[in-house]
Length: 260
Image (cartoon, rainbow, N blue to C red):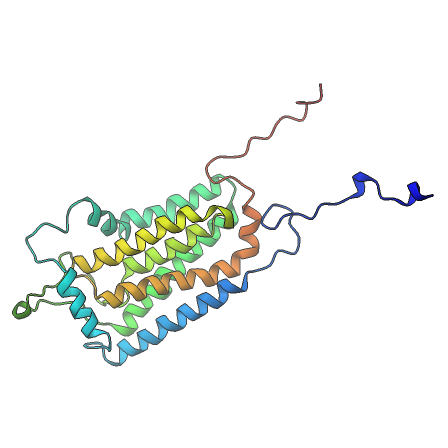
């Protein structure tokens, strides 16, 4: 009787590990939503402050001091060597090709279509909803020549609107969107690389006098925060992709193998 009542070994079900295919009760991490909303609130609050006084917002003294420290003088050539140009191209056509075409297409190729849709949504919402919309609403003047104080304007051709830095918004999006493609245990290396990209982009945008320091800093915050909110929205779909390899398709063994 006791043997009949005892469960067999085959009847014991091991709970699936969260983040693996087939995992049950997958939840959206609330921390993503909260962090994203707080970041967007900060971004919006600063945008309103700049819109109220575009010529000289409350950060102008810090922005001026940073430009005097980091900004280049025209004719030095310091803006055209490999490292600053890497960041320049990352926010222009080469970066757009990478983030709007190559990465999403690759994700579709390796059958991570959920991740591809998330990545495209993050890029479109961030670059148009956060960057371009805010630029047009706030229309903060970019740094201009102030020869009396040894300060200079942009060293590259730029469009209107200094806040936020579109390059910085794109970097904030990339920082979070790529991290979302990996399961939690495999994100550390990317967070380190992403942090270097963030620091480098803030440095480059102010090195060439294209933006004020606050434009770049809050651009990162805006892009990253919007992407965190989308990560929360897509979280259950993204977790279904975590069992699929990022760099090659998983090769399944034929059904006949191992039967002999």
